[in-house]
Length: 124
Image (cartoon, rainbow, N blue to C red; front, side, top):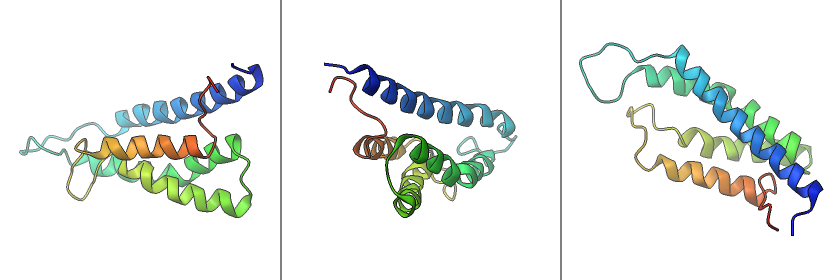
């Protein structure tokens, strides 16, 4: 059974995750593909990925502060751990590799959000 208060909390966190993904999508406009001779791994990805990392810790803290009951030090440590999964979710800039296996890191990121109670099963 779904409790309305729990549903509202879960939806708020889900909207927070979607808003974070929307921000990433919008940021891709700032880093259009560059003209280059190689058809693999556009170097503009490095700049985009650096921006993901630069804002990532703040983004993780925002999710944790808004949607968890962790204490101050726990929030910071958890945000640092979440950031590792988050930044690996979008590829490896050193190799210009994005998409091969990195999806698993995104699933781990979602799993950790679930284990923290930030994303919850709304069916109880």
